[in-house]
Every structure is written in structure tokens, then in C-alpha cells.
Image (cartoon, rainbow, N blue to C red):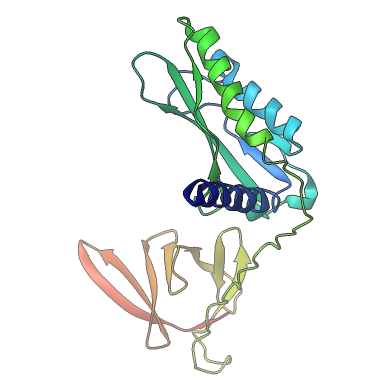
Length: 237
């Protein structure tokens, strides 16, 4: 008897935890194609998933749709919903899985089963059966708001020499990088951002190379006549 009570208590606690977790999310995102299917919305599974999520109370969207402006850039305000197939010889079994923006599993449905022989009947039936356990959670959005993280963009440090140095170059922002101009003014190089703030790719009329910051100095590296060349540039960002 005590064992049965403990099992019921644990089940209720897990259900409450799953419900609370899902309640943190207003938007549910559904892929247009599941991994085990051969084409988009095969057997109407994606449509059925979106419909059931809306019925639960989520604002559901396909992953190729535009979301409301209020959630623009706030990927972690969304829960990502997937349907997975469970291996079975005698029946069709599906499960609905909810994950957060970091691909951590939040909760999953009970296994939905169908014994129909035709896939066009079995898959929708199994999916709808899987959703029954999710409806039982009583989802209700609790108003949690996820703020978009703002990443600090680092501006490259200038060379240490004063600006009146004759060969100083001045960086002007362009798309994906800067153009470096001399005092003429003339565009001498165009440098383009990479994933590292201390490394740029370089283009000019005569060279293609790399600009690397070493010991707070900007070093231009490129090949000339099949030989490596390295020279210091004085740049004011």
C-alpha cells in the first residue's frame, strides 16, 4: 500500500514539474519535417502537432514562419517540439518531446500507439494518442519573460602610435568589416571580420592576406612572389 502511495506521489510530482516547466513558454515551435519522415508534413503529422499545441494553449508556429515582433531575437522564450518514432514491430508508436533553446529536454509525452495497418491512419492516431498525456498536464502560460542576451561587440584596439604618424591608416566601418584609408584619403585595404576579434581577412587591388593583432600591434601577412611577407600596420579604429 505504501509503495503504491509513493509511486502516485512521484508521478504527481513529476507531472507538476513538467507542467510548471512548460508553463514558462508561450511559443511552441514545430519543424516542417520530422526526422523519421520522408517529406514535409508527411501523413499531416506536423499539422496535427501544431493543431494540438494550439489546442493545449500554446501559440504554435512552424520553424519557417515569422514570429511576433515581441519575441524577435529571444530564442529562449520558445519551446521546441519534436515527434520521435519508437521502434515497434506490431504497432506504430510515437512520442512528443519538448526541448529548450539549448536542446535540453524539458518533458515528453507518454508513448502514443496505433495498431492500424496503414501508415496514413496509424501515424495520426498514434500522435493524437501521445498528446492525451500532454493535455492532462493542464498547460497554462505563467507569464515568464525571457530577455534576449545582448553580446558586447568589441571594437578593435588602435595602434599605440599618435594619429599624426605619416603612415597611419584610419578604419571606416563597412559591411562585415572596415576599409582602411590613408591621409589622401585613399582606400588602401578592406578588412573583413572573422569569428575572432584579433583576426581579419584582407583584400586590396594587389594582395589577399590576413591582419592579425600581436602584442597590441596589427601585423599584415600575405604572399608575394610565393614568399611570405609580414609587415606592421598603424591603424586608428
